[in-house]
Image (tube, rainbow, N blue to C red):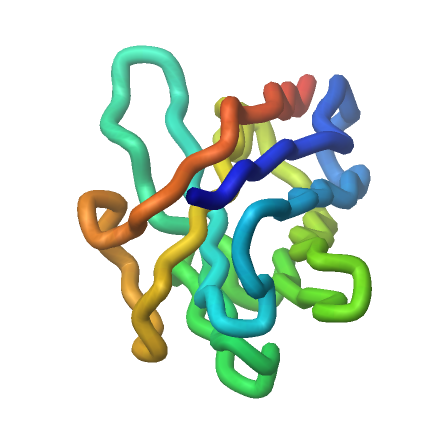
Length: 124
């Protein structure tokens, strides 16, 4: 079992930045692929970014490519999402997810463990 706790959400103006963190416990973190997803009101949960066990491979949704950066610190069992140039359409609850497989995945139903989410609100 893996426990995931997100932090770092908040209210920011358009064009601003936020850094989300997700602390993991309960399993060897360096053997988990980690992902970020988001869900806006009335919409389905959507893929944002994912990173491999070592952090050497990453994958991003087209909507955030060039603005968001996923990274991880295996010594601290934490994954990060640096969000720059935020837009009002980035407003959502952001979720951290963990997957025991080695391959990178974009589908939410392929992830094994989830955090409780953190709210990000971008005002125009």
